[in-house]
Amino acid sequence: MNSISPKQRIFLSHASTDADRAALLCLQLENEGIPCWLAPRDIPAGKRYAEAILDGIDECAVFLLLFSADAGASTHVINELEHGASANKRILVVRTDDTDPSQNKQFALFVRSHQWFDASRGPLSLHLGQLVRDLRNLLDLSGDTFEHNDSHPNLAVAVPSGPVTASPSEPAKEATCSIGIEVDATAIRGCVFEVGNQETFGPTAEAEVDIDPAMRNPRGLLDAVKNLIGILVEKHFQSTPPVGIGIAMPGQVDVRAGTLKFGPNLYRARNLPVKSYLGGAFPRIPIRVDNDVRCATRCELHLGVGNQYDSFAWILVGSGVGSGTVIDRRIHFGNNFCAGEIGHTKVALSGPPCSCGQIGCLETFVKAQAVVERVQAIATDWQNRGRETLLSETNITAETVMAALDAGDAAAQEIASEIGARLGLGIANYLNVVNPAAVVIGGELMNKFFFHMIDDITAGIQRNALAEVANTPIVQSSHIDAGVAIGAALMFDPRDGWPYP
Image 1 (tube, rainbow, N blue to C red):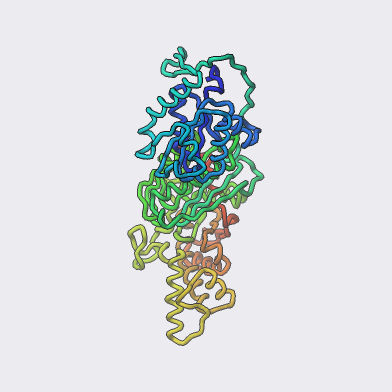
Image 2 (cartoon, rainbow, N blue to C red; image 1 turned 90 degrees about the vertical axis):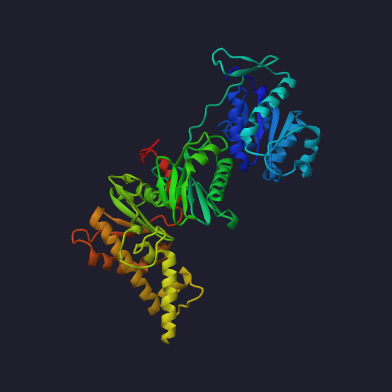
């Protein structure tokens, strides 16, 4: 492509929600021999984002806009369109959703005075052939022609109608940061993290979005993840793309395929193609997917207790219960990537049904919802017997239980002892089988109750574990907030030794 003048380029403007369509169209154009300028991919290293955008428009022959509701409300898209018009560029507006561009005051003038193309019916891929033909016509009107390139028989290359002055290009800056995304049923958290830096202990940027109740389904979830990634890429990777994007999913993940096989606490989703879906949206960025608990374990390995122990277990207690295992400083995945399902080990012959379809699972006794239900039951029992407690069977939250524990409430202490003993039994089974050098406990629930339950957890271990492993250190996680998202980003850290393509 070195023989192609910047003047033959298509400048592709879009909102972040259309990033996947923009990447698809740009790829098709370049396969047809039509170079395409696309932010943030083509922002030169060391150049300011806004200046590079203006230069990109000035150096292109045709301004191509993917128009949608989000683009119509985007200040940066409007500014780009106005600059393209003021620079007398040929403009093609491509409509990608049901929003009528003629009803948008900022865009109506351009729709009336320039070409526009309706690609709102069906996927954009159905319209690529006609779009390429229209863009070739616009380039021809701009004085550009295309001829055969002998070195690439299937590639047409633009030949400028006038002399070309070559400008030196800046060397690409080596990418050092990756994106980590933590997914749960109600919110998505993301971070930008510098990988390979032994002294980095926190993300360089963080973002969190709540999932709209109407979008709380498997497809809506993938769209929400894609949108958050698009925001992070657009905001923080203006000159150099990320090393990769790591996704932490709750449930059983086929790590090699990047598929969520079963998410019992994530709308009971099955066979969710996370990697392939996001790979279509961000085709030039490597994507890796792992279980959320293994991601938290990975964070602890590289940035936490891994400095002290080469082998340890990390146990999460929150909306569910899971664990990750490190052996000789490597994450252990298991033959079917199911290693660490401590929440589904049996600690009773009866009990409430588990989301996995079984009964007697550890998770059904110690996860957050189980604690709430147990608090309600004990509070009702105490009140029926006329015994005083600070707990109420209504409006139970982790904070109200914490306040009761801090005040020495006997009912709250009874609950903490019961939950701690159950968790101690589950950990004892783990120690007997795996024999790690330490056990790290974290997660939403244990971040709050660790110090109120540790004595009962330890007592439960002592009663049920072999003497040789009963004194294994039990420590609280050092990463209680962003550990999962950071661990997702760390899938691209060279120290991690990710074993799959």
